Image 1 (spheres, rainbow, N blue to C red):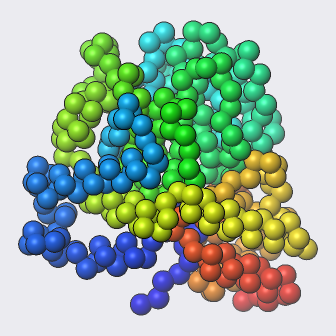
Image 2 (cartoon, protein in one colour):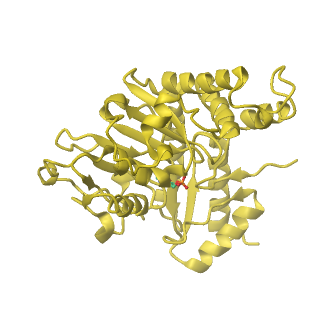
Length: 362
Ligand SMILES: *Cc1c(COP(=O)(O)O)cnc(C)c1O
């Protein structure tokens, strides 16, 4: 068996100990005589597993008791619809557009209400988070939306913006659990699991409980109402059981490795190593993003010449460094270096870039 370094933006690398454990338990989970995939979601065994997953996430992120943790399906993209459906009371929300994902979220919310865009980073090709004058936030906006880390452009908020005390709804798909955050500063956090938490198929929602409503419009489908998941502890219908099981293992792994302060330390060390190299390189450059807004998780870089980019991707792949091609809308390269990417992966990448600079080709 040979495993490569997987730099994919998502679905992404998972911790190897998690995969090994899952492999060991594939035919029989504990003494249940079945795989988790075959198990009733109403069984005591699965219920225990689900509650442990929630408890580990609460402990890791220090989630206050007045927040619900929900396990949903439909990816972060469905949250682009669910958030406005559930949280718009005045029918208005302000969206800070800092890249493709916040743009998609704003477009989707526009189907449900009046969306105002106080800042749009498009004129700077999303290479920086534009300054926000909070005076422009509408007084009757129900919330302000942000995408904290724009996965495609590799552009991240260095700190939460000031939004006139409005509730913040945040897409954390590609940065959840990469460093400690103060959950109480958000109203709603959501994240598709497949970047930093587990396999595709489960979406994590962390929601302040006072925002769970009894008075939603009757057109809102049962499964698109947060209250359904809250009232039924994420077991109204069949949840994505296997994805939750793997997330539980990743969360346990994160705790055993030292929790989010330790992840932050490692992620900063990894990012620093890579950006440092790129800043000094004669050939490669990461200045596609303004250095003040560089993502810890997704590092886009270019050689400045598409033919050289292609040649580098070929050399990288032959060295076991996979999925480094940049998003089709940006080009160049992108290294996604989530929690599960060991520093050895960054070292191998840098070594390959060095050799490419020195003329190595295949
Ligand atoms: C990947 C991604 C999405 C889309 O996630 P799906 O689970 O595929 O819907 C949304 N937002 C961000 C920030 C992402 O990185």
